[in-house]
Length: 287
Image (cartoon, rainbow, N blue to C red; front, side, top):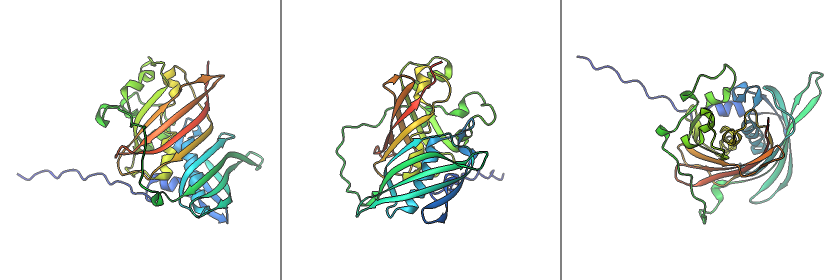
């Protein structure tokens, strides 16, 4: 009897040949000026995800500056970005032997055709491969269940069409102990933990780390709040080039006051190395 052919293994995307790479690609119009069509594939409801937007600006600065990798990047989100055409303008502030610093702004157009600034970024870039391999830390990777014991969007009720396009492009498996909000019983703790990757299997790199810090459900859900939690400011420190394999992301909030909260994120790679850290200030809806 002839044996049935086994199903072919899924083809994994590679860095440079992934939907993330295509959707963050910028076209240089002139020195320091870049065009992009912001993809609707990275939206939550109608809002373009802030981490995706930071990756777009990060890619433009990587082209404009003499160093390849973001070491620290701070973004102020001024107005809500929409899918569609945008222009990025960059300026080189300083270049040195190990670090270069630049700024970038992303603009879109209102109904009258006038430019509206959406985001303004200040960043310092270097070469992660040139850093010494010397780690002295008291930080420890988060401890939560393995991938097959965690839960993703596909394990819950079917979402409303178009409500969260970004989840189709991510591999998210959340720690069950931070999923009380999804069951109507939030823990009251400002914690969110998840395995993270891109759905097409592309391994992480420094630019996708800018997405990873802002891709999980907001900690406000586990505090007991609902609704959109828009980012006001986000600062990311990239500490190392991540090893292949899924990442672990841990986010905590310690203080919600006056309608604003902070989220502190750590991203750990498959070798238990801390590869990125971030802090953001976000607005929370209290009613």
